[in-house]
Length: 242
Image: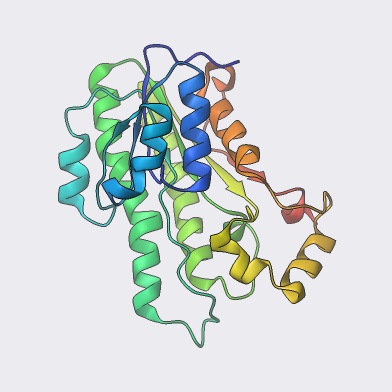
């Protein structure tokens, strides 16, 4: 089991399923977790359950990100905050939705990395950042022009950040999950005409659970992954390998 005793880790998107599962695992492994989300109200359940610190801020506002993170002594970050946007083709896409998805998923994660990495460099203890990307960045998915593009940008943020921050002992990786069948995703992926063909193509033939994603996040943060940096790790039941 990983040991994060004495390490402060910021988790964005902590009010969501993957973010919440990640918070629970990190707390159990001794980390001092700071849980972030867009609203204090949304964070109340995970804070009440785990006793972690609540730090709400708007990922699209550089001023809010800077004010929240600057001066904090962070060892690690999980960039889990994100938004799905819409299901639309390139012809039908709403560019305002595209801009918002990019602003949250890519730009927001970069802003958090910008200010968190400055803190980690200042402390001189190294550290680790894990970005929660998607299988939608690795293969083309129907209707995912906005979401897939935002996650492809996030994967490049991961690679360049790993390159630039490695000299400070800071590792940066992405995880690229398949669908976690939550209420939020079921409206689309739960449709029989979508779910059936997708699971038939997937070698393991099942959707991921929140812990299926949180476990590899914990591993990539841990010292056991001390020589892993700049990777985009599919957690997709083999889907992107077919």
